[in-house]
Every structure is written in structure tokens, then in C-alpha cells.
Amino acid sequence: MAKRFISAQPSLSEYWRAVILFGKNTTCYKFALARSLLNFAEQQRTRISLDDIALEFSKNVCLHLKNNDRQGTNSSNSFLDKCRSYNASQANIDELISVTKKQGFNYVFDRFHNLTGDKLPLEFYRKDGANSGNIILDDNIFKLLETTSLNDLDEEVESRWRLVETAWKLKLSNNVVAVNYDRDSENFFKSDKERRKSVTSARGALNGYQKGECFYCPSKISIQPGSVNLAEVDHFLPHTLGKKFPTINYDGVWNLVLACQKCNGSKSDKVPDKKFLDWLYARNNWLMESDRPLRETLILQTGKTDKERFNYLQKVYNLAETSLIIYWSPEQDKEPLF
Image 1 (cartoon, helix red, strand yellow):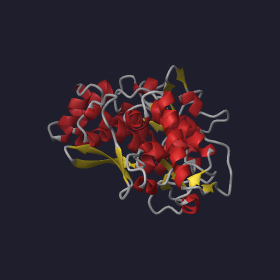
Image 2 (cartoon, one colour):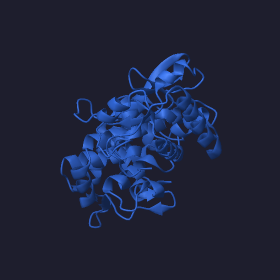
Image 3 (cartoon, helix red, strand yellow):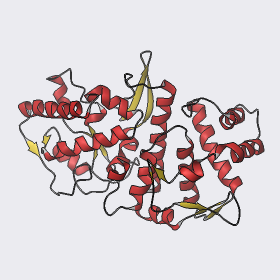
Image 4 (cartoon, one colour):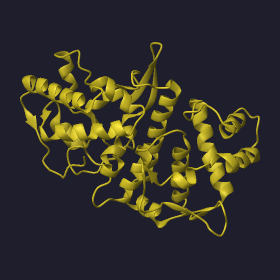
């Protein structure tokens, strides 16, 4: 699926997002390294010492441990335990850096550029052959930030990390509801004994799959509050249909896309042209392949098999047609992203 996400003429942002969104997530290390790389690139640093990256990497992990104590499929190892000790003021920064250098980087440096069964044809960093363990940021990461908002990329990493750590904490299986959507806050949340706990922004969680573009038109979108092109969280099929069909969860992730303000405003409560239903189906397949916890959520909301999920979308679209006969298309067409 990651290969299908990458187009015939791929951009650097597609390669980066493929790494973040896809693959087996057994630890938080990929996300911690990604945020570290973005931070060093923002500082325009090209050669990073092992001590410096160990500090940045471990602080990212320590911060997440404060909010979610499970940071992998295995709950503990010597590196995570040292991070916990540091958070509890039972270890100093030198001890944290030392353990990070010995244990925290196991495999992640070599595997960061790997996709399932394959490897990216380019790199965002490489090891410094002259100084074992140090890394050199490649021109690719600086070029990436020339064309794509650093803040958006960082928010996408953070959102994906928060979703995955939620799955680790809940030890999700295919029959457990993972996340729901709150229309007022525009966040994904999980329910815990009748309490809601916000997981992450829906914008940050969905933007990478749309490659920073409006779902319906070629317009570039941002996920940063206050941005002039701030994306709107759009219900593909209007949530107002819930009054007529109360058994259908129109706030489900299967029905949420990001749209530019112009498309969201003109579409309003109209039904999108049927070609967009195919796009939604393909986008949902990307969410499925991205794994926990959106995969489990989609299975519960739309079906276990590919056929069941396709038939579900067709069914709810047909119901929408019986109630809202006004079809909508954007003023500006584009090649499908999905």
C-alpha cells in the first residue's frame, strides 16, 4: 500500500509521509527520530553528533511517556525505563544520553527509510562514515522543508504517534473501538469508562493521507490554527443525514476528509459527485493499511472485508441520494490523489 501511496512522479513529501504513515509500528522510535530530524533541519544543522541526537530523541520519548506510559508493543526495556527514571528525577541527563546511545537507537537508524518489504530510493540523512554514530542530514530534508510546511509535517508525526500509542495502551484487537470524532473540538477521542480523552487533532491525523491537499480540488491546505488556508474537517456525506438515519455514524472516520475553505463552504450539505465516492473508498484503504488504530476503527464502522467496506459506502451513498438530490462538484477539477 505504501508503494501505491507514492505516485509515478513522487515528491519528497510523499516519501516522507509514506515512512510516517505506513509500516509496522512496534515502538515509538520512528516518530521520535522523525521529530528530531525536523528540529535539526529547522536549525539548518547538517552534521549532528550522536550526543545531540540522543538528547533530542530521548526528550521526545520522555515527553510522550508523561502522557502515555506505553510506547511500544512491549511495555518496557532498559531505554524506556531510563526515560521513566529521568521523568521521575531518578536519573540525570548524562545517564539518559548514555543509555539512549547504547539502547535507544537499536535498529531505527538503519530502518527509518524502510517501507514494508522495500526501501526508499533516497535518504533524508546518512551515517557519518568518519565518525561512527554521528549523522549527516541530506539535502533532501532541506528541500522537503522548502516545499512543505515544517509545522504541518511535525504535527502529522505527532498526530500519528498519539494515535499509535493509544492503540498500544489499549492493546487493541480487531473487535475494540479505537477512536471517535468530536464535532465541536474537531479532535479524535477515545472513551474510557464513560469518560472522553482527546487523542489528537483530526486535521493532523488525516492531512498526510491527502498529501497536504484539499480532498476535492488541487488547493493546498494547512493544519496550523490561524493559517489563511486552514483545512476544514468535512463530512463527505452531510452529518445532518443523521437525523433521518440515526443508526449511521456520520461522524465516523470513514466519512471525514479535509477540504479547503472554498470547497467546504460551497459543498455545504450537498452530496459529492459519485466519482468522489471512489476516492473516499481508496483513501479509507490507505487508512486500513496504515494500521492501528484507524484500521480497527474502520473495520468496526464499515466492515471486516474489502467487499463489506465497499458495499457499506455504496449503501450510505445511495441513502444520501434518496434524501439530498443536489449533487456537488468543485469549480476546479484535479487528478485523483487516491
